[in-house]
Image (cartoon, rainbow, N blue to C red; front, side):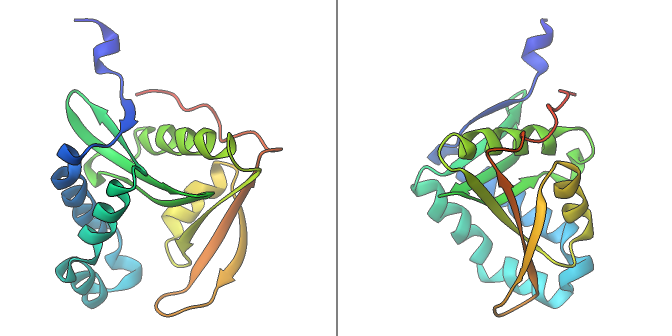
Length: 168
């Protein structure tokens, strides 16, 4: 078997991916968001169907990219205008370089069309925020609104996208 068959691939998501994408989002929210959002908020968000609806609405717009390997979806990103709206890696596959790979793809895709790109993160999501900063994103303003505080991160086309990720 060739090594290339084991490399992760980033591709546009299709309708056939919907169930897997929604399940991955629920697993990631359940495993990673409780520490800073709390059990009640996470249980409500998953139980309300809001997470599933968010993924489905963006899939219908053609704005979702899957990171897959050996037939399984290990992560996905949602791109909306100049914004990385959502990016998730399956919790069982964290710390393997997959997030960098997916983020780099999103950066290249958006910077080809926009001079400044952005993403939002929960202010208390220290793991994600440290990751974005290590990848060259600059923290911006705290965003006002309902719910937990969020921070905006920015990157411009003058900056190099994050370091070229190593493929696991």
